Image (cartoon, rainbow, N blue to C red; front, side, top):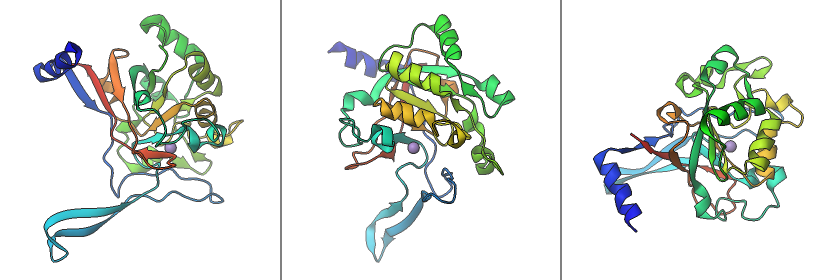
Length: 258
Ligand code: MN
C-alpha cells in the first residue's frame, strides 16, 4: 500500500497540508438560541478535577459539560425527527467510512456580505458544477460564507427582535444535494446548518429535515474554509462514539494540496 506511505511523505514534504476546520471549544463558545418554549442547550462549562494539587499531585484534568450540539459539531440523522427511524443513524452506529469524503467548497462570501439571510439555491449549485464538475456521491459540501470571521459572539449569532439572521440553504437545494447528488452531508460556518430565519420556513428548519431524513449529516461552526480549494481536499469528520448520540463536538480536519 504505497498510497499511505506516499500520503505521509507528502505531508512531511509539505505538498499536502492539514487544515483545521475547527473552532476553539470553551466557555466562550457561542451556542444556538431557541424560542423560549423550547429547552435550551447549555454552553460549555469546565471544572477542574485536579491540577497537580492535593486532589491529584501529578496530574491535571477537567470535567466538561455541554450539549451535544456545541461549537464545531456533527449532526447525526437521529438528531431530527425525520431521521429517527433510519438504520445506522446515531453517533455510535454510523459506519466510520462515512466520516471521510471529498470536499466541495461553494464560496458565497460575496453574496452573504450583501445579504445576511442569503439562501443557497439549486442554480448556485449547478453554476458551481459548470466550473468545477459535478458534485460526486459521498462528498462533504461546505458552504463558505465568511461567517466564521465574526469572532464577536453577538455578530456571530446576529440575533434581532425577529430572530437570528444568518445564511443557509433553500429547501430545494437541500433536496438536490441529499437525493440527487447523494452527498455525505453539508458543512457550514454558522451556528447551525439551517439559515437563521429557518424556524419560520415551511417546513421549519428544512435543511435539517431534508438532510437527516435522507440519512445525511451536518457540520456546524466550521472555520478556515477559505484555506481550501473548491475541489481536491478531503475532509475527515468523526464524531465521538456517544451511545445513542444525536451529535457531538469534534475536530474536523481537511487534507488539502499545499
Ligand atoms: Mn447541531
